Amino acid sequence: MASRLLPRDLAALTTIGVFRMLTRSQLQAWHFEAVSETVVRRFIDRMVERGYLGAERINRNGVQVVWLTQAGADLLVDHAGVSRADLFSARGPAAAKDFDHTTAIIDAALAIERRGFRSDLILPAWALQRAQGGRAEVFPDLLCLMRPSATEPGAALAVEVDLGGEPIGSVLVPKTEKLAAFLATYGGSALAILLLTSGSRRRATVEQALRKASIAVSISVVELDGFVGGSVRSKCSDSGHLK
Image (tube, rainbow, N blue to C red; front, side, top):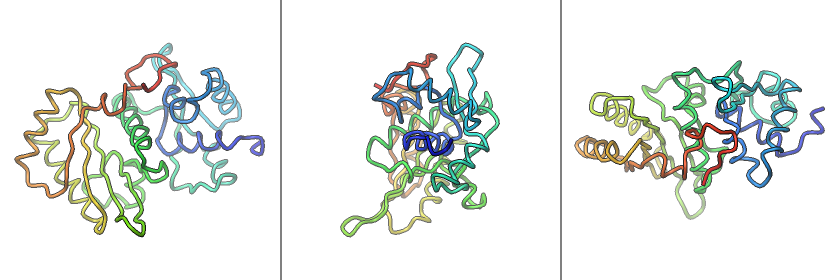
């Protein structure tokens, strides 16, 4: 059965496993952009039937979400050479309180990959926590790495997604200071923080607060929806696309 899977099928399963879950729209934007939605639906149906994916509609008639099962993780380890440590096998979608943040992080990861970072070097927070045994005080929502070349140094970009639910002065600024300390462990690379936030007013307030903080690392504060080119997570439809 595994031998009949296409390379695209394995790549899609891997992305789902790395990022905890994907909406169907995100899956299409990442791996099936050039084909019809019917192809995506059939892929999900096949993978669910084989036990490699779980799927659920949020609030019954809302967006469809998929996640990698233990059987799917076993498949990728045995037939695609993926490390088990790189996969998050789940039993359901992210909890309701984490859902918007999780999907926003995936939107950001896709947008970053389209800007030139290799997808296998975009690491979500859970993978960093596992790799480092939780030793750091904070972990970025995404850590995006570029390996050094003969002419260019490496780069480490920490990405934090702020949906507006945290106080800026008492939570967001101290967290950003700790992210800068986390990045400092990647010495020898160009270091930067990208803070994706909600709305122009909050962006301006965050920028003003960060200017008063003593952070040595370069920081860019950008509106989330503009950065991802039209937020997939905000579309309550399975046919949503990144613009």
